[in-house]
Length: 557
Image (tube, rainbow, N blue to C red; front, side, top):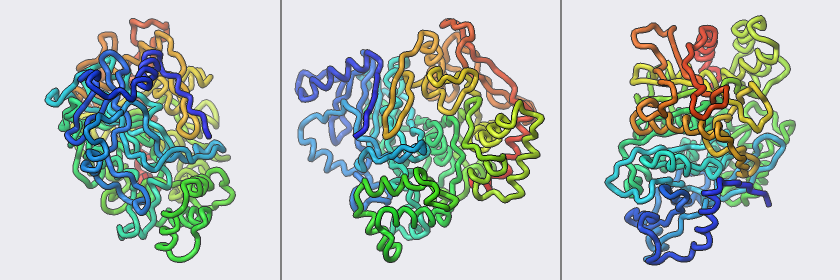
């Protein structure tokens, strides 16, 4: 048993309480604007604001149960859904079960959730209808491809602020359930590479087919994500598959290794042994794993992180791999080679995000990126000389932070600048609940953009109150994001007080003249003045990220 702590804003909480009391009243008393007809089923949403409806837990694919474990998702059987609904309106007023969670790595155990989780939450303006052709935002959550619950990142307030878009937030399989990858999956009779990523693709296919029922325009879709969600966005940009989107926003792109299937063999064998499935051929091990309980698999997938001394392999996690078919190369390599979807892009990172530190900088880099040679790991000492930083700690934090997260801003921003255009940012407002003044850590913008959320273990999350200044800054951020969704430009519908966000490369300049917006609230705590401003990308940072980009083959990112 675990505790889910959701301190929703009063309007949302009151609306959810009311809708729970009325959940069985699915009759003529329902307001037409709260019900959507997909053509195969009608769904009743939750009226979270007077102008906002949240349709929660809409299935987009068949449940990946039984023999479908570790396999690509099957398209939704709409006939089955229609038969199960009969002539009744389906209640879509409460969040669904989230996908099975893995450990965050903080000595916690995962295991909460359900395998029957291929759902999405759709947020739409009240009374939006087919033919409205509203632009669409599709959000892939973060969590290292290991954990994450979309209920922790609600979009009700975004629609309330800008009731002229539709937003879909996607549940996709995580950890071993979504990213068990071994060489034998090249024969799809055994399983499928990157099942969790294929879940995301299937959600985009469902959105293309059905988002018009919610008022959305299937031809105007922007994909967005943070951390592993931004890594997902990057993978969709380079994937060898139909393009189902027209714009992209990538927040703090996770640049952990996108390995080869061969790299995953040791953790697969450890996983199978821990789950009690170590006997026989790979085919027999997979059959055993498909029959194993969720509890057994949850313990097995957590073991390398909770008991690192028990697993001595270089790659202890389950994550996307280069499968040679859809993901054909390391994403940064594909981008540098020009092999990516040519769509407008926003990409950025927080000021101080970093990674796990070892005793020395070379050890830190080798632990995070086992593919680095010893010589390459030592090169980081030269590229990040101690005399350019305030301390050894800041030097090491910057080096691992740039390779793992921050340099995606330069690598992707530069590649997309003229094909067709890009905007980059440095998010510089610390999460006020973390007690680290002046240090803007990873995911700090999530707290601001999603009602003061701090995520916990096993899908839990706590919302804390926001001050008027914080709320005003959140509205500024959301306006930039939704302006981009609506027009392909963050400035078209920005707030009047917000500065113009100039493109990454100044027109007519060389690649050395780069600019970005620094996103922060007003230092004087005014709700009527923006604290954001434009800065030039530091040349030292540009040079370091050019070096990082040159190591993409070895870092496998």
